[in-house]
Length: 151
Image 1 (cartoon, rainbow, N blue to C red):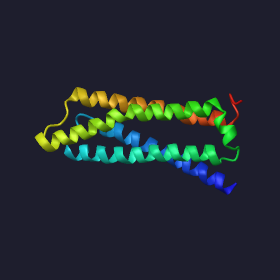
Image 2: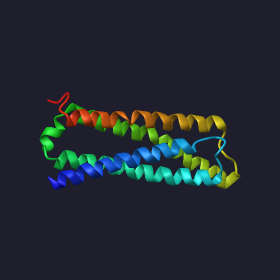
Image 3: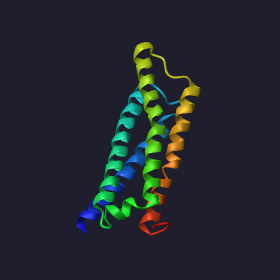
């Protein structure tokens, strides 16, 4: 039972970390605030975000394989597959953001030019989409834990 509690805690901590760093990106992505230091910070925040995302994926897989209900039960549940699909889709939706930060930083180091406002707005919209869509994952987790829509 202690092992299950530790897995649950780690999974929750990863969820919260991911939320914090997606929110940090959204807060930093303001045309008026963007400068070289913010570009560096965005890239650091993005790296930490990806660590949280990967840890979230791994802790979720650990719970599915070693959870108290057993791997057979977890892997037979459509909600688990939906959660995993959504997490992977949000990861894919976040990848262009990571590439944009790297390109912006390269451009700054090469030409001392910040990205244009419309580009910042486009990336911020993507971050905001991920920030809002990620809320569905814990909702699905709560439904799964409470036995809603289970087989």
